[in-house]
Each structure stands twice: as structure tokens, then as C-alpha cells.
Length: 256
Ligand SMILES: [Zn+2]
Image (cartoon, rainbow, N blue to C red; front, side, top):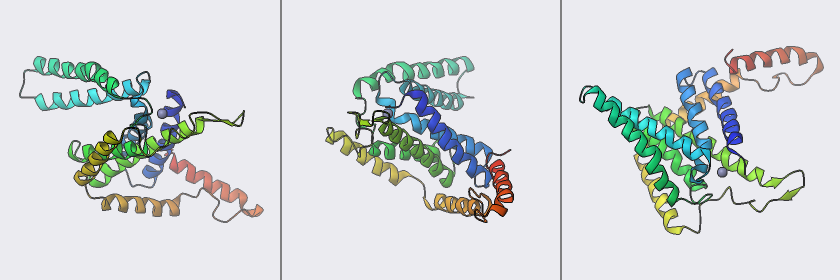
């Protein structure tokens, strides 16, 4: 099993690269790319929120507590006296971060239902619906947030599976095959409930088509402007100009 730092680093690297490519081909703004990157990092932490000792669960609950408290603060502006508004927002933050987190911990088993492909789909759709209904993002951007959470969460499961293979000793650890699973078959009732919620969330999610258009536009622009391989092949005479062109593309991708 990969540790917290590895999960953050690989999810941040993978989704950061993707977000920077999307920004460099002009399908998202720099602010949107930052939001997508954060969504990708969050996705990379989500499968371990069922581990009571992992830092992921504390990070995720701190983030949720902050978002809910800020929303409450914004809602109360103008209706409640400032001091009371602040005290209530702090009380909400503390409630989510401590008692609610402890209740959550007592109900979850590490590498159980939340560490599965079904849960990744569930997290994705929760984010799509929240981005659409709560943050008021466009349909394309809401699905993009969900897609980045999914990519981050899939990177997490893959990393855990890779870490269960001891490459040096060429042996397979006992945890092999437990990281990537469709669902936790030992919990059929909860799995069914999660599947039901996932289908319901899909029902509430915005149209998918604008996101599909955005992706195809991004891919088309990428084919025109991002050459990861020299377009003229590996002819020795062409290597230097091709390298120069590739270098310029790379600079464009990282936004320098
Ligand atoms: Zn894990």
C-alpha cells in the first residue's frame, strides 16, 4: 500500500499535467485548471478516507468542514449579526471536523466499500452534482471536476495495487488484488445502497454532452499543437529541428 505522501505526489503530478495541457490548449482558464487540479488531488486521497489512521481522512474532513462553514458564512451575511455568524460558522466547522469524523470512523472499515471502483464512481458523481447545483459551474466544468476526481481516485487504486508487488524480491504481497475491486462483496446491502445512490446522483447530474464536446475540442487542439513525438519522424537530419519544436510545445504545455 502506497503511503500518504506518494498518493498526494502521484495524483498531483498526473492530474496537474493533464490540467496544464487542458489550459495550454485553451479549453479551460487558469482558474478552472487550478480547481480541476485540486479536484484531482482530492480524488487521490478519497479512497483512503475509510482508514482511521490515515491523514487522508483528516484532510478531506477539514476541506469539507471549511467548504460548509464558508457557505454558511456567505448565506448568513446580511441576515445575522457578524459575530453570531462567525461563531455559528466556527461551531459548524468543529462539529464536522471532530464529532462527525469520529462517527464516520466508527462506521467504516479500511479497504472496505469506500476503497473500490463503485465508490470511485460514487465520489465522481457526488462532485459532479455538487459542482453543478452548489457551486453553479457549467455542465462541462461540473463533469470535468468529476472526471479529475475519478482520475485521481483511479491513480490511488492503481498505486496501492502496484505497491502490493514487491519488485525487488519479485514476489506478490498478500494485499495483491485487494486494492482494485468492483465493490466490497462482504457488504452486499451497503454495496446495493451505494449503487442506488450512484444511479440517483447520475439522474441529478447535468447534461454530459457539453463535457464530451470540451474533451473532443481539447484532443483536436492537442493533436495540432502538442507534439510529444517529432512530427517528421526520427530521421537524423530532422532530429534537431524536431527537438526544438518539441521543446517549444513543452514550454507551451507548462505555460511558460
Ligand atoms: Zn488506499
